[in-house]
Amino acid sequence: MLAYAIRRLGLSVLILIVVMTAMYGMVFLVPGDPASLALGPRATPELKEALRERMGLDQPILTQILYFFGNVLQGDLGVDVWSRRPVLDQILEVFPNTLILGIVALGWALIMGVLLGCAAVVWRDSWADRLLGVLSVSMISVPSFVVALYALIVFAVWLNWLPAIGAGEKGDIGSQIRALILPAFAVGIGWVGYLARLIRASLLEVMEAPHIRTARAFGMTERDIIFGHALRVAIVPTISVLAIGFGSILSSAVFVESVFSRPGIGTLITGAVEKRNYPVVMGCVLFMTAFYLFIVTAADLLIARLDPRVRDVLRG
Amino acid sequence: MSSAVDGANPVRRGIGRALVADRMGLAGLVLVVAFLMMALLAPWIAPYDPIALDVKARFQPPSAQHWAGTDHLGRDLLSRIIWGARLALGIAMTSIGIAGAIGLILGLIAGHGPRWLDGILVLIFDSMSSLPMIFFALAVITVLGPGTATLIFVIVLVSFPAYARLIRTQTLALTQADYILAERAMGAGSARIILIHLLPNVIGPLVILICMDIPVVIMLEAGLSYLNLGVKPPSPSWGNILSEGYNALRQAPHVVLVAGVPLVLATLGFTFLGEGLRDVLDPRGAGRRWG
Image (cartoon, rainbow over all chains, first blue to last red; front, side, top):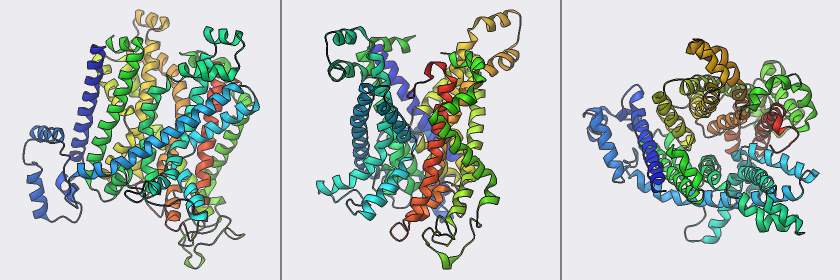
């Protein structure tokens, strides 16, 4: 287990290093130089020269990269080109909003997905099963930001039930929850369909197992078998899917956050892209990469702990 | 693992008929054909010029004159949506085509080439496909500046690793097959093995994956254009129409409501068609709706 954990962590660190180098190197690929790119079109030659010196661009490139790595390790992701505020501060300020949105979205998707998946198995091969199948595919394929826009028009503009923009008042839990409902609905809906499919397929496989046949022979109802015995086995494969799913949830959060003008990583990075504020963009990418690698690695280690067979795959 | 490959020929004759028999696949086919027609025939079927301004007629709700209403500059929305189909499908097919070609080449190299190269390529594919790629896409857009060319580049960047991984897996499985070993024993070079034997066998699964990816790419194009980071206005991208409609949401909600419809129908159509195709092409899944 230890050997596996070390290899798995090593792989994650390697990926992180590749990503950091790529992000840092990307600036050098464009015509012009990083200082003018970072400063934008309005920069004066003196400003550029000053920044070039401060960024260490007069040093050899290897020194620059090592310098950059050293800074990142100390938690210094650079400063905002326009406001001069540290990038990490800005990220930490809005990240909780995105995290909560992701967790709530994935949470309701998991609950609904499991329920719909089980329902489909209880009524398998009936019209209800087929309807749920078409419904799941539809939920998966409809773009989340279109769902967000429609939900915004219906529930915020026409019915005026929920706020159209923002993340709620600071310190007012009620308004924060109200501001979370529509975004979480839009972000999670695709995953309801996806998880429903996954749970259904996984359950159907488990339902063929001998211990389930025995339970059936003892006269247990399908419902009791599913919720009492089959589901707990069938849900294991979803752990790794959920970890990877968190990445795609965060991706749709980028779009949904801007629909609802909700402060978060998504609105931070898209705003920075529009202003060509590269330090903020790079900071967001590195932060999200590290966060995401952490989640996926943790999930892999958890699965390896639960299932010894997985450990041997990386060893060989 | 390779049943889609082995089973392709006997099944191929019945694809059309089987797809029509599958109601969801049929619905997908009808929608996809409708959007393709829209894209191809846009100049002839669009009732107005999609970027012609008519400020006096701004924000008109749907009427006999403007079936889908007009936007904040008085442009006919139906015409913009029809031209938008051409833009969405054009960008999706171009970028997916390029990504497919790159994925095919890199996947063949990784699966058939020297081991050290395979190791490096797999590390790259794994890094790329196990990360939230939209964030990288945004970084690339920052560096290159938004626009159609950047958009296509970004879509290629995001999509090709999955294709390369698929091709690599297929290639690795096939390289161990008896007939390839026999061919090699008879002295065939890598070029012959790749072109004559591997290529035709790995391309089928790639085509299915690409079909299933088209809705994702249409979504990405519209999403980035919606954020003003994709196709530049006044081009009638569905994402641009949505973003312009969003700015007048309270005044004229019909713009967003109308512009969301083609996006939903196109993604549904391609997904249904993809699902139908997979059911038909993969005999194990035949007749099972959920796959």
